[in-house]
Length: 80
Image 1 (tube, rainbow, N blue to C red):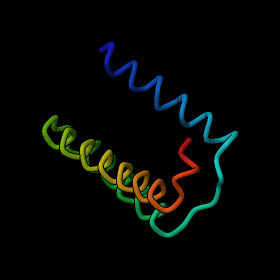
Image 2 (image 1 turned 120 degrees about the horizontal axis):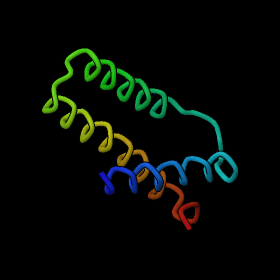
Image 3 (image 1 turned 90 degrees about the vertical axis):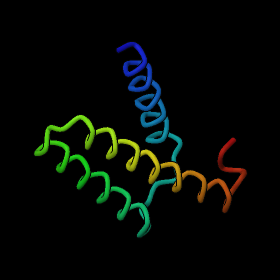
Image 4 (image 1 turned 135 degrees about the horizontal axis):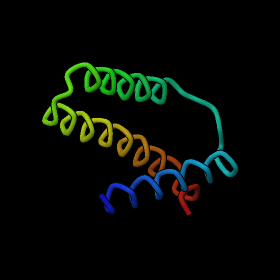
């Protein structure tokens, strides 16, 4: 549980810092990523299956990673 708690703390910290220092705005790929994450959470809620939940968490995390890598590639100076 401590690992999950540490993950929650780190993601929450990044989220709060992004509200203050982030660039803002949404592009089409951001909206699609949010939609995929939302659909994954809904599927997990209704199935209540640990295996499906794990697969969906990996999928949602992968989508977020792709967005981060894409942004870092296009504007490397913004990731300092």
